[in-house]
Image (cartoon, rainbow, N blue to C red):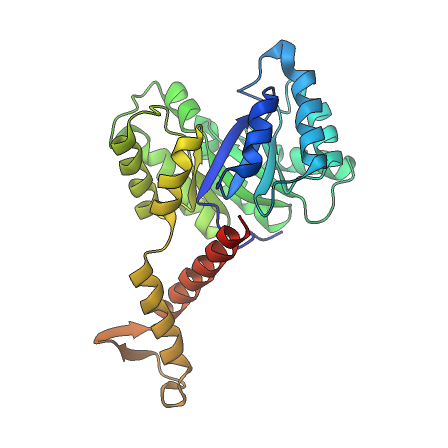
Amino acid sequence: MTAIARPRRSVLYMPGSNARALEKARSLPADALILDLEDAVAPDAKAEARAQVTDAVRQGGYGKREIIIRVNGLATEWGEADIEAAVAAGPDAILVPKISSAEDVDAASSLLDKAGASATLQLWAMMETPIAMLQAQSIAAKAQDTRMTTWVMGTNDIAKELRCAHTPDRQPMMTSLGLCMLAARAYGLTILDGVYNDIKNESGFAAICEQGRDMGLDGKTLIHPSQVGPCNSIFSPDAEDVAFSRQVIDAFKQPENAGKGVIKVDGKMVELLHAEIAERVVSIADAIAELEAAG
């Protein structure tokens, strides 16, 4: 299953044990929602959260927002039952934490198949352990023969495992992010940045979003609704870039430019590779416009 080309600028975690949060999520302008059964839920609330989340997904009302259920880890007492219930609810994707090897991807995908998952149900994977960083290429390669489409960077867990600090420039975890970026792009995966914990630090949040965007990450996971608007803005293509991209696409379609590898557009030399970039920019911009129009 190849990655679906769609906006994933803002991907908001919502605690599965909080019924009010699940209801509020239906009106938030996030591109995607992760209804969480793992970190946000205490052990004695796991069963209740599972029932609450699956009921909410069945009820629908989330519009065009992509709906993902994050289950508990495969090695936990809740993991397999979470997957069975989540598959039956029919979300867009199931997010499995602590994926650390290609075998973990196979195991998760097999459980989805066993539970009767539809062909369109995606597998998302949390990349959050040192061994996962070292195995990034072999894990990413499973996108070729499984339903895995997307990686979510678990930066809090990475920092914990590396015993490193959350510095403003994130230099201590750049190796981890970079290795996963390379592997994700090599195998066509969407890759989402980790969360930013200091909710009230608006300038710090904006800076981290800009850093992730400039690195090439597709979007960011969020922990509070107040982060959605700024994240959407930063991860949206710039209006001028979209306009220029449309010019590039149109220029290469002109009969006089047929077969050319390099042409001049608005005083700039552009190659066929720029036309490919332009097509992606325009595709994402059009998809964002459609998503936002739907409300």
